[in-house]
Length: 118
Length: 370
Image (cartoon, rainbow over all chains, first blue to last red; front, top):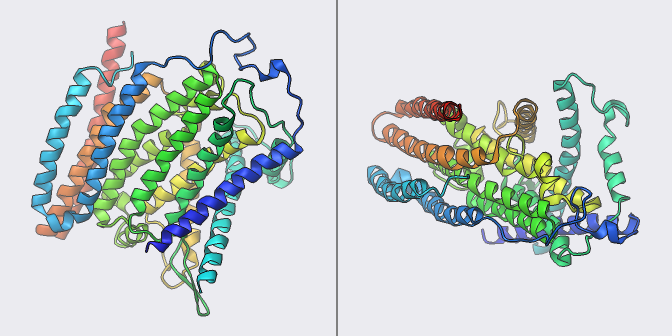
C-alpha cells in the first residue's frame, strides 16, 4: 500500500517536468526585448503609484483563521464517517454533541461580524 | 520486477498527464464552441475542420511569445508560482479510477495510478495546495491588481473548500470508505446523486468556486482587477495558469463523477471492462457542459455576497446534509433498508429551505436599500 505513494511521487515529478519544459520552450523560442517601460508594474497604462505590495485588509486574515478552525472540524468528520456504520446511534449522538459545541463558535463568529464584508 | 513496476508508473503518469493536457486543449475548443452556440454565433471555424486545430495554433502562438519577468517581481517565486499551480491540478487525478481492471493476457491493467486507502483525504490535501500557487503568483508580481486578485481568490477558495469538505464527508458516509474504488463500488445499487441530490448539487456549486469559474470568477473580474493574480504573466507562464484552471475543471469533474455519479459504472461494464473509461468520459463531458452552461447563463456574483454565500449558506447547509445522511443511514441499518429514501426527500427540502432563506434575505436588503 505504501508503495502506491511512490507512484504519486513519480506523477508529481513527471508533471513538474512538463511544466518546466513548457516554460523552457517559451524561453528558447520567445523574443527577449526587455525595456524599462515594459518591466514596470502594469497599472492600466498609468505610471505606478506607490509600492506594489502594501498592507492588506485584516478580513483576509480573519477568513484564513476561521478556515483553519472549520477545516480541522472537517478532518475530524472523516474518521467518524468511515466508522459510522459500526458506531450506530452512539456515533450519531457523539457527533451531535461535537456539532453543538462547534455551532456555538460559529454563531459567535457570525454575531461578532467576522463573516461580514462591508 | 521492481524495474517493471517503476516503468509502469512512469508510463502511466505520462499517459495520464498527456490525456489531461489534450483534454485541456480541447476543453478550450469545446468551451469556445459551446459558448458561441449559446450566444447564437458560429465560434472558431478557421483552423482545420470545425476549428479542431485551433488549440494547437494557440499553443504554438504562446510558445513564440516573450517569457517576461517584471523588474520588481520576486524572481524565484514568480517563476515557481505557475508550476505550483499546475502540479496539484494534474496530480489530483492520480487516485481517480477510470475503469475496472482490464486483463490483457497475463498482465492486469489497472486504470489508476495509485490505489491509496485515504484517497479522498489525498484529494482534499492536494486541492488545497493550489491555493499556494495563486497566492504566491499574486504576491510575487509586485502589482496591486495581482495582489488583490490573489488574495481574493485564495480567500474564496478556502471558504468554499469547507463546503467541499463536507460533501466529501457525505460521500464517505454513504460508502463507508475513503478508497475511490470502494466509493464507486458502493454505488452499484444507485448513484449517490440519487440518495443525496442536494449534496451533489452543493458539491457542483463548490467546485465552480474552487476552480474559479463563472459565476464565481472573482479573480478574473476584469472590470475591477485587470486579470487578477495573473496580470503580470505572459507567454508560457500564463499558459500554465490557463492549463491549471482547465485541467482542474476536468479533474474535479472526474472526482464529482466518482463520488456522486457512479464513476465508471454503467450498463454491461462488468462484461466489457473497456466500457468503463467511455462511461467515465461521457459523464465528465456532461459535467463540463454543465459548467460552460452556467458560465453562459449566470452573471458574476458580487464578492461580499460570494463570501456570505459560502460561509452563511453552504457551510450550515452541508453540515445539516451530513447529519440528514447519517440519520438516513442509521434508519436504513436499524429499522428498514427502504428508509434510506428518506434522505433525498429531507435533503431536497433542506436545500429548498436554504434557497428560500437566501431569497428572503436578498429581498429584505433590497427593501432596506429603498
